[in-house]
Amino acid sequence: MRLQELGAEVVIGDLLNLNDVRLALRGIRGAYLVYPLSPTLVQATAIFAQAAKEAEVEIVANMSPWNSRPSAKSPATINQWLSEQVWRSRRNGWSRNTRVRLPACAKAWRRCSR
Image 1 (cartoon, helix red, strand yellow):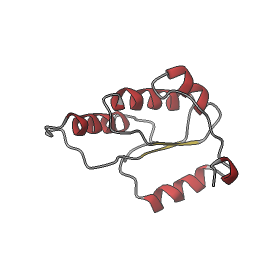
Image 2: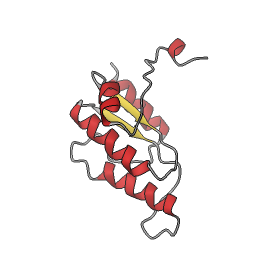
Image 3: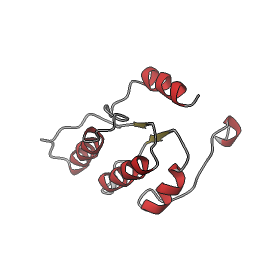
Image 4: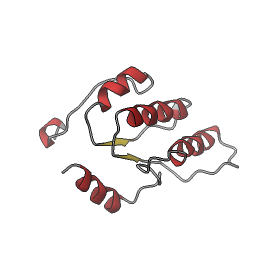
C-alpha cells in the first residue's frame, strides 16, 4: 500500500538541501527522520534539526539504526554518535532520546497529531 493511500503527505526533496527540508517541514507538527549510515549522516541530521527548529515542529523521532559510542573505530559508528549529539544538544525538548521505543513514540505522535 502506498503511503498516500494511508493518509501521509509525501514530499520529495534532498535531505542535504536546507531549503528543501524547510519546505517539507513547513506547517507540520511532527516529523520522523531515518537516514542511512553514510558519510553525510551528520550533515543531514544537522540540516533536519535546524529546519525543524525553524518550523517549530513539536516532536521529532530520530531512528538510530544501532548503538553508537564515541570511542568506536568505525567512521560510520562515529557519524551515528555525532548525529545523536545533534539531537541531545537541542534545548527545546522535542528530541531527547534518539533510540525511541516505538510504543512511546506512537503515543507521543498520536498526542501531537490531534
